[in-house]
Length: 384
Image (cartoon, rainbow, N blue to C red; front, side):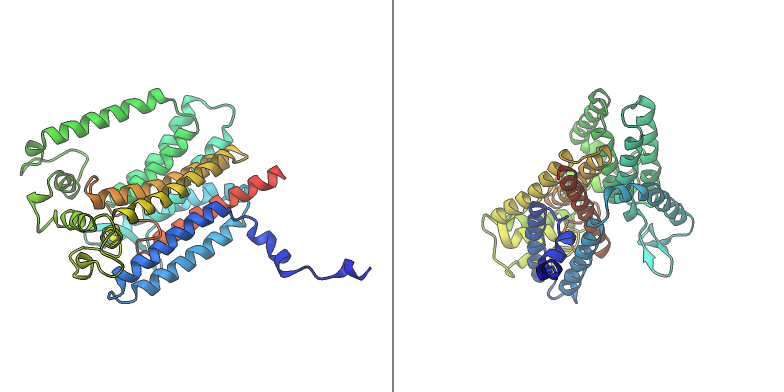
């Protein structure tokens, strides 16, 4: 009878803690983490402690992911309203007495300097997923209107800072929840068509619209200049167009196979601005070439598709909408960053997940991954 009282093995004791980890999702993250460490070592080896700090930020994000993965989705649901209200309150505080740097008021001093808009990248989809879960089975047009208002308030506050990049990410996360909740295509199509018409007119009449003295409604001067620079970087090659031009030169000079690890001349001669943050993709492209880019894009697509698969198999409306929104957050991060570095989107402050240097963004990524792991774990519990 002594075997009844035998102490369970270490693997068996750890099993409840690691059972929430989705193997395929973890594999995709592992590939991106390896790419990020390689790129940061090359691009940041002569830039202080960037590589060590990047590794530390990844460890912090991994710890956050591990902790959040242990929280049941039902508990996450109870955090939705408080976290949303906290985020909006902090955004209002930023508007009243925030810290201003380089003409933007995005930060708040609460003993340490924080950027409250980062909270909304997760709080916004949490809040909207909670709202639609509560309205399950009785959705009306008014419910979508309320969801739109809940989304518009923080997006407007972030735009006022101004922070176009974060505002776009929060808007994309919120709109993905609203769309996945069942928003009619008839309401989605008109804005898309108007947007395509606007882009076409902008390209055709670019010389007139970007002439000196012409101002656009709803956009600040620097945002207007970013769009005009995107259409014609050569209008100011040593000023506003410098980032885009140098990014495209680095990407093109990488060729098919790249110049090799630690061999990027544009990177190490410091022609690429912000080579460890917003423009790290240019540094990666120069050293690993088209083949490396395709592999990196494949890793991101694998991550997004796995997250969408978790959403499709999620057991509740809340978990399905939340997982879908997190998948779209990762997609938007990668698409916008690669697009702006490649010269097909305006330059905005959006990092490349796991590749770009930045502690706050890495924490957000860790939270998102933890949520996906938690939802995957809840799915397994329901199936068993």
